[in-house]
Length: 393
Image (tube, rainbow, N blue to C red; front, side):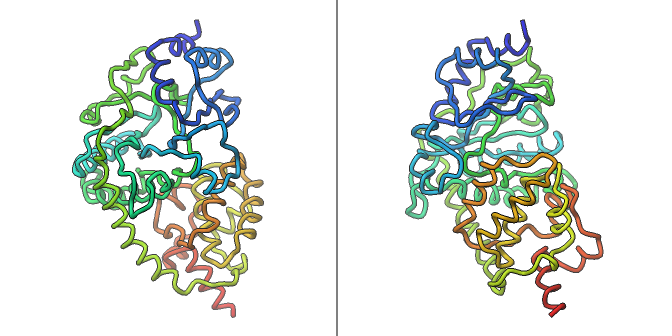
């Protein structure tokens, strides 16, 4: 029997996949053939077997909970998504080299415990990183008089940013790196509407390992051998429902932290232009990538690009056209529904600056850094474009 078919034929694996798929959108990966139709759901244990027989290798679930996932469709507005969404789980994606991800995951769990959270789930991604989760039932019904279920993806992003700052000093000490987030990160870019992540007990196509749950108190003792297909156990329950709103302190403090950050951002963008700055004034990192596309780091650059253009006075329609043209030049273009979701989300939000030039998790890590003498002179790609346009005038 095919090893994957044998694995997914286990009743305990089927039951866990089915339990966690309830009210969540499901995406099925058929390995080299890519993902199947979206939206999709799992209804019966036999569905899993039939999909694996057709070539399915892994199952990916949405962070968001829906009244009916099958009503989802590409290009939905925020209001339409809000009406369908009943909640969301906080999924923190710790990404980087395994040994550094392990340290960062341990520190995040300790930070959550500090905020009086007991119901913490951790799983090995199957590759290099970890997913740390808190169920939606752990959060209060409202934050700042707004229903919490409406605060997606804002709330997870704010919490992730807050936790990064919270663990930063300890992470510097333990990794001996001045900028530890240049090598390991709590990924906030991928937290977006209809974002999917590899389900627990799913196969990882590149590593050949299984994404398995881990005891939160044993992260530093975890060995990848535990994730081999023949060693997988289902004795740890991932994302248990919470009976108390124990994450209230965390989300309130995270939003207070964000208010302070917002004040700093407002000061930075006070004098941004109202009329679009011509592309001839763009820094090389942006201009070269727009002209040549990318093979890796496309989602990160999309985040940079949207905020860069918005900060330089481009309208939503102008941004859409530029993004679409750039995507055509990518070695493997981003899916249209992903791009549309990002554009829709940013359509009615205020302009924020893209990451600063010294943020290695972006420009350097995706290989688009400007020559060093340029980066030393400016703090942000937006500053470069503004200065250059003023000098020409």
